[in-house]
Amino acid sequence: MTTLLRPLPAGTALLLLASCATQETDRDFFIKADANKDGRLSLEEVNKEGLPRLFNRFDGNGDGSVTLVEARVVEPGFDEKVFASRDLNKDGKVTMAENEKVALSRGGLKKQFAEVDTNHDGVIEKAEAEAYVAKTDAARN
Ligand SMILES: [Ca+2]
Ligand SMILES: [Ca+2]
Ligand SMILES: [Ca+2]
Image (cartoon, rainbow, N blue to C red):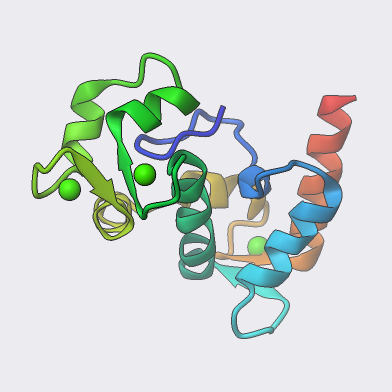
């Protein structure tokens, strides 16, 4: 499933970043992430909306930081080294800022973005998002 602290497995839906993977929340992600409302998503917009959403899924107690224990609640066996690589100040907690800094230095959600950007022009058009939603729905059924 989707993970916060390391690259998502290939095939993971970008738009499944919404906590509940229904068509409605996928559309909701597109609308929310489209900060400048031009009907297209840049990688920057996807990272800005997507990274905090992923982070919040791991932050079980909602205190703004993720401990290794919290990470393992979501993903049992979560790799300690991967966790440590995100914990920049080594205080045993990964804050949203730490996570974003490390994630963005690795391109953030670019893999997931590329999967949806089927014509590879660097923007996700609404039609591409819709096609992706339809495809993942078909794969589920
Ligand atoms: Ca927490
Ligand atoms: Ca830290
Ligand atoms: Ca495109």
